[in-house]
Image (cartoon, rainbow, N blue to C red; front, side, top):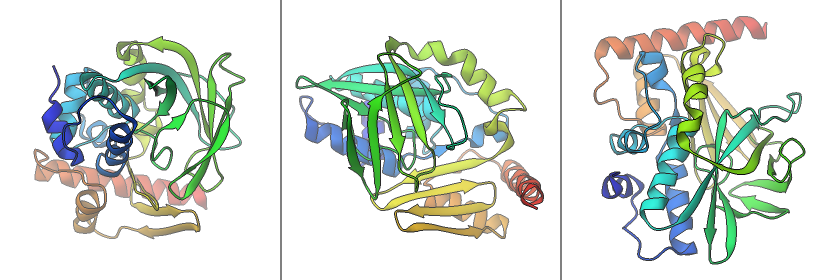
Length: 278
């Protein structure tokens, strides 16, 4: 059992009746606007699981997570509300220089509703703002434009391609249904390996109808269709304010010592990144 009412309270959405496109759209928009993509627990040394009830509980407590947590929780919510939702193995192409892949480092979702299949994804900030039909085409998503086309690396699957202003290039996902538990080994690697980007860089992301906010250690970036705007966070106090006010991340249960450690890590990571940039 998951805490449906607690999750809906975070989303600011009343419990809907029978599954409908209107309700699905409202749930999706609220999830991308109110539930942050974030990896603070990795930098706090707090292991997490992919149990759907725990993923939902994180959200109810004012936290977020990365794709397995966010899409896993959203799938559980939709299932509890009577939607026909399917989980898929996916892979993210971060930049045009990266190779398209189906590495299983992302969890994709599709929803069958009224005879149509829709792609849903509340764990790609700056990606989908609302579901899009699972058929070839170009779709407006907030200020961005996205394209769906057949995948070359996942036969029978799909490639979700972002416009150049977005924070990633594309996502490929396979057609076969999978269980959330099948991502357990990848989740462990991503959250513990020194080579993992999640371990190397503290991050938070959150979308709205006009664009998205992206935090990487001390660098806060705003991305909109017209371009990007960056600023460097200068103090621990400002850092905590950004987490709370921009990304809606509750710091309840995070001790003063842990907050100081998060800031220390953010500063060290930013210094390393600055050095790499020359």
